[in-house]
Amino acid sequence: MKRKGILIVVSGFSGAGKGTLMKRLLQQYDNYALSVSMTTRNPREGETNGKEYFFVTRQEFEAQIEKDGLVEYASYCDNYYGTPKKYVEEQLEAGKDVILEIEIQGALKIKEKFPQALLMFVTPPSAEELRRRLEGRGTESSEVIMKRLKRAAEEAEGVENYDYLVVNDDLEECVAHMHRLVEAAKNTPARNEELINNIRKELETFA
Ligand code: 5GP
Image 1 (cartoon, rainbow, N blue to C red):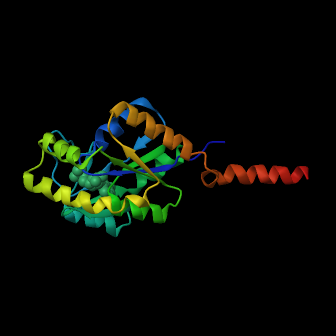
Image 2: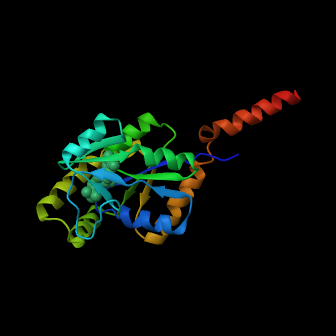
Image 3: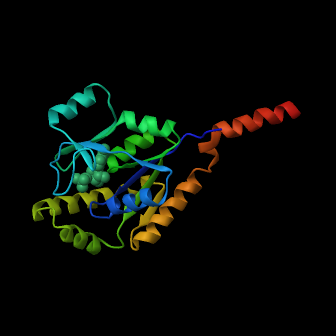
C-alpha cells in the first residue's frame, strides 16, 4: 500500500537558519519535497525566481488568491507570502513528505485546514545569537533587521501552537533530529487511520 506523504510546517525566527537546515534535510533524505512559495518581496542578492521563491507583483499575488491557487497566505513585514496549492497536492499524493517553510500565521491556517500536519519551530539557542545571525547575513538594512527582530518577539508568543521545538545549535545534529521527529510523527495512530481501519476490518472477518 502506497502511503500519502505528510505535511510538515517549519517556522522559526527570521535568521534561525531554516533555509540551511531545509537544504541539508533535502540533500540527506529522499522522502522530502520542499514547497516553493510565492512572494511580493524583492529578490535578495543570489536568489533566483522559481528556486527560493516565485517573485511576483501584488497584482499577480492577488490574482492567485482570487482563483484559490494558494493553500495559505499571509502578510509579513509589508509583503505577501503564500504556498501554491498544486505542487503540495501532487507531492503528497506521490508519497512525499512536503515541507512548508512558512511564518506563524500561515502555520496556524495549515493546522486548522490539515489537523494531521506536523508543526515544527526552529530557534537559535538565544536571542543574542539571532541578532548576530541576522546582522552577519548582511542582506538586510538595519531598519529591516529591527522590523524582523520585533516580529520575532511577536512570533515567540505563538510557539506553543507547534508540535515540536527544534534548537538549531549544531546544524548536522539539528537535521538528524528533525528527521527523527518526522519519522516518529508518521507513526501516530491519527496519521495511519487507513491502515488501522483495514486491520480492524480484517480482524472482524476472523471473529
Ligand atoms: P524571507 O523574506 O526571510 O524569505 O521570509 C520571511 C518569512 O516569510 C519567513 O518566516 C518565511 O518562513 C515566511 N514565508 C515564506 N514563504 C511563506 C509562505 O508561503 N507562506 C507564509 N505564510 N509564510 C511564508
